[in-house]
Image (cartoon, rainbow, N blue to C red; front, side, top):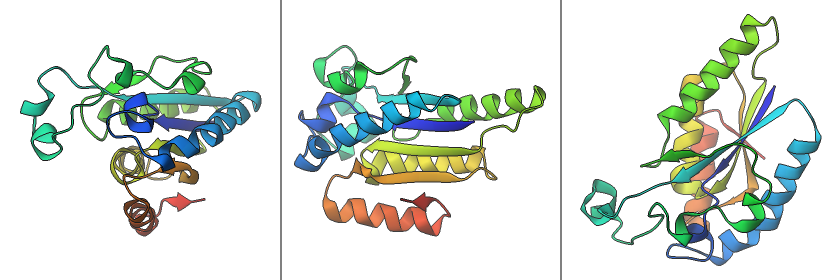
Length: 181
């Protein structure tokens, strides 16, 4: 089974508090990638959602990035409408960059498939925002939970805080044996 992980395609990262033109530009490609996975059958698509409380500025992340964003229940926290329209599974809310819950879900899925005599997870592809923060954090977590499964990042469906930090993150992931396409 192939897995697609759609990372934090939320309004605040696209055209909200932390939005960029590069993030806006990937939305159609992300939608196309999701549709292609949905049409191919034996795939699962998981979503992550950056989720903060009203006390965000008091958290470690808020002290270092004092821009209120993705506060639960706000428009900025919501997954962008184009992606939301395609979503079939409840997103995994995460209070920080990487999601150990995501890793646990994937490991359990792989073990369940193998118990059924099936091949297990054959690859995990990540797309979304931001390449240099949450995409890299979750790609490394997936690699830790499923070390023998190819982990892929589709760079055309990702955007970073800056173009330079996006490219730096891609290079760092390559060094950790994450395939960049």
